[in-house]
Length: 314
Image (tube, rainbow, N blue to C red; front, side, top):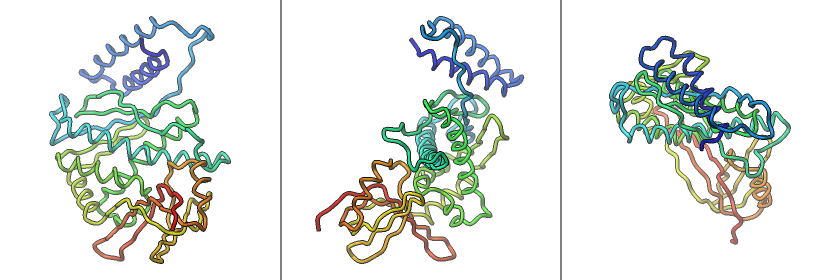
C-alpha cells in the first residue's frame, strides 16, 4: 500500500497541473481521471492514529522539461536514450546547485555546512505532461520544510545557468565563471545529448513564463563547451596549506612547487572539513577537479575544486 504522505503529495501535484491545463481537450481529462484515482486511493488509506486531522503538505516546487524535434514523436513518445540521459544529467545539475544553495541557506542560519548524514538533494520524476513530450520533476521531499523554498530556487538557478550558457551574445568565459564547477560537467553532457538527437528544450515552471532554447542554440552551446571547456579529475600530491570555512577557499603546494588555490566541493560536510583541516601543513593526496576554459580570444583560465584529501607519507 502506498504511503499516505506520498498520495497527498501526488494529489497536490495533479491539482496544480490541472490549474495550468485550463481547457486543454487532451490533457485536462487525463489529469481529472488521475486525480479521481488518487483521491479514491487516498480515502482508502487509514489516517495516522495519532492525528485527528490530515497534515497540510507544503506546495512542492516543480519543473517540466518539454522536448521537441529529433528523438521525439510529437506528444506520444521519446527515445529512451534521450529521455534517460537527459533526466540523469538534469538531476546531477540540480544536485550540484541545491548543495550550493543549501550551504548558503546554512550560512544565513548561522551554520557553515550541511549536517552529518544530511540527505543528498535529488529529484523525483513524477509524470509526463503532454505538449510536445514532457518530463516533470519535483525535489525529493525533505523533513526540513525550509529546504522546500531553497530547492525551488535551485530549480530556477539551473534553468538560468542553461539559459546563460546558450546565449550567443554572452562570453562563454564570463558565463562559466558564474557556474559552480560541479555543475559544468553534467551541463555539458545534458546539452550534448540534446544536440546529438536534434531536440529543442522548453523549461516550464508553475509561477513564471516558460522559456524555449532552440536546437541551434543548443548545438552551438554544446560545441562551444566541448571545444573551449575541459574538465578532469586528478589525484595530486603536495602540502595542504589550509582552508577557510567562510569563503570555502583552499591552498595546496604541489610536490613540483606549484600553488593551487580553489574552492571545496559543496557535498563535503562539516565533519569532512574538520578531517581535511587537520591536514594543514602536512603532506597529502588531494582529489581535485580541474576545469580549464580556453576561449577563442583571450587568456586561458583554470579553476580547481577540492573533492577530498587524505594524509600521505612522503
